[in-house]
Image (cartoon, rainbow, N blue to C red; front, side, top):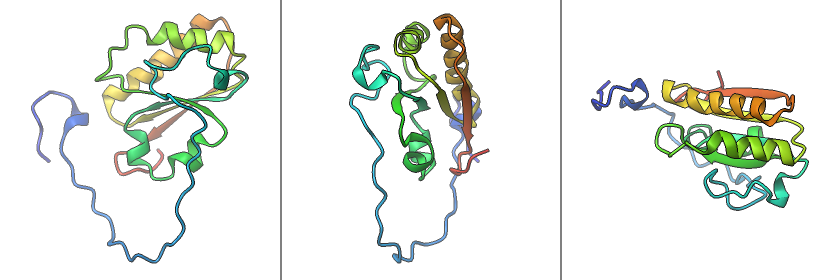
Length: 150
């Protein structure tokens, strides 16, 4: 494995070997996305799709690593995506706390990659729940770089 030199083990280059595509599957996956925008920087906390909705706060890379993200994680949920390493996250805790407190959020799922830098998103969501003043059930899903759930 080659290291790109930035110090984060999540930046190490790795090739994931997969069996050759046989072309036999003729069914395309259906998108479960129910709203736009999806970037945490862009979603308004008062958007109608957050009202009484389970929310998936998802690291950007998860949907590309885990092929079944829509069916396994997104179905029936409002979505906010973010990258704790590359985004300016200074406003994320406050914005999430506002979303959680003003929309009667019943449940939150946070989906992150197994790499260390992704843990920051889980921490931000936990802080936002606490800051919201509500007790909201939280499920954390960790996805391996090969796309499997850990």
